Length: 329
Image (tube, rainbow, N blue to C red; front, top):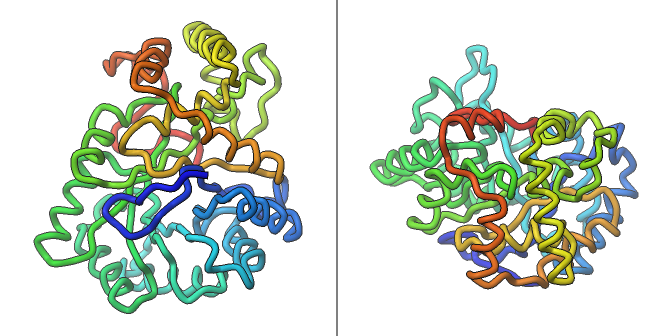
């Protein structure tokens, strides 16, 4: 396993991270023993970044992680998320302070390595949540703060507000990015590259589309139906998938390997957040880090999955401006 610095921090993260939105979900991973087996395999293969959120698994994902990491907390970096949705008169500060204590308790830890705001808090001035987050950093309950699902301009505006007030800035950005969903290339990725912001792509396989198993119209599970269903009905997406599969095979790899290798060849990417339900899936994800694309190879893959960034292309993939359009993760 390889490791990279997360932006301008002292966190060295594995280039493959574990996404845990399946943990605690009754239809996915409901047994604590299964969660522990997945996390034990992460340790065995060198994956040290565990990404979760206080809403995953109906609030149980963090509980599963806390139980599984007892006695081995120092082997991992924990990234979790909170949100400011539906405040209903509650102040952003009160929500954040309540949420962080709940997460610390569930995770059975005294510090969160990366605390991320999950969705854009529309109508909430930056300083109203950056101030409390800065206090958590000063208190030692949080090491760094980041965001999930922001656009580049909104991230930049938040960090401007942090700089003006001497507050802890966002050191990372997490967003939907894959060979089939490339909208972050318009502004967010260039911004992250220029300002040394660690980028953490999620949905690296476009909901499973880039495994190839849904190409022939196979039934798609509910969790991925919206994203994959759009691609199944898209003639161009099917053609791109076929060409990507052929390219991977020509180089002695699978299309899954290619999907991860292409992401890791981008200079802004610190770690690819990938879900797994079994130890075998963890091992498969980890093995993809062995393929390092040359600049020429990444350019060739870019050409296969090319898009022009026009409004038509954005609309075709159901991409909105500045709000998450993929299933909640």
